[in-house]
Amino acid sequence: MARVAKKAARKRPAAKRAAAKSASAKVSTRAASSKAVVDPAVAKAQAALDKAQSNLQAETKKVAEARKKAAAAKAKAGKSKRAADANAAQRARAAVAKAADKATASRTKVADARLALANAKTAASVKAAEAAAAERVAKMQESLAAKAEADLNKAIKGFAARWNKKRASADAKKVKAAAKKAKTKVKAAEKKAQAKVAVANKKAKAKPKAKKKSATRKAAPKARKAAPKAKKAAVAKKAPKAAAAPKAKSATKRRGRPPKKATA
Image 1 (cartoon, rainbow, N blue to C red):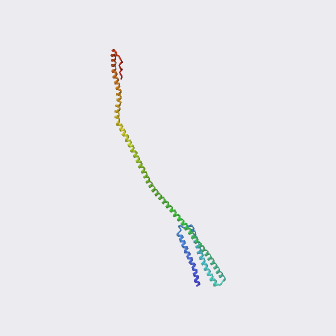
Image 2: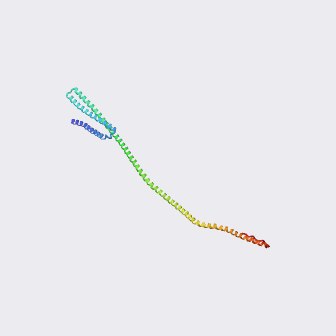
Image 3: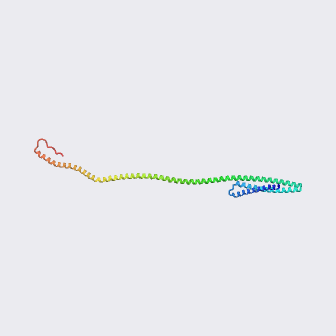
């Protein structure tokens, strides 16, 4: 029963070693699969773990060999009962203890290396998450900037269309008002021109009559002026006869008042 228990006890470390090997193999395969994006700290920690595991394997082999030698020396010393063989067996046991201590130290180093690797992976994952988040934020920023520019252009186009429509309506009203005002001015100018033309035509028609009237008016003063002259001539013609008459009568002097002089 004791031998079976010892064999079971010996098998347990072997099982632990197999589990450690499988774990290291998994870690190594994971590291190999992520070589493209491995963080330098993770790579360094992985290298340290691999080295510690290889040292542990070597120390484990040494412990196994030392135990075999110690068992053989113990068996030899038990058979021979010699002091030299007993000393050899004691030295073999000391070698086993020394190898076991080294193996324990190697296991501690492996555990520390695993912890360092886990920490490095955690830090790398955090760093990768930060980088991924920063990249997502940058992409989002670029996308939002592009969208903002597109929206701005769209808004500008919409505003320009509305502004142009409003301005066109206002300009159309102004043009309509200006056209109405200009039409009113044109009509007024047309009426004024027509009135001027009518006045000119009326004056043109009235000029011949005015000329006739002016001619008659001018002829009347001349006739009036000529009439006194004719009267004077007639009086002048009659005057010699009248003068001759007094001469004739002078022969027969007349008593009383003298005759009146002829007046024009």
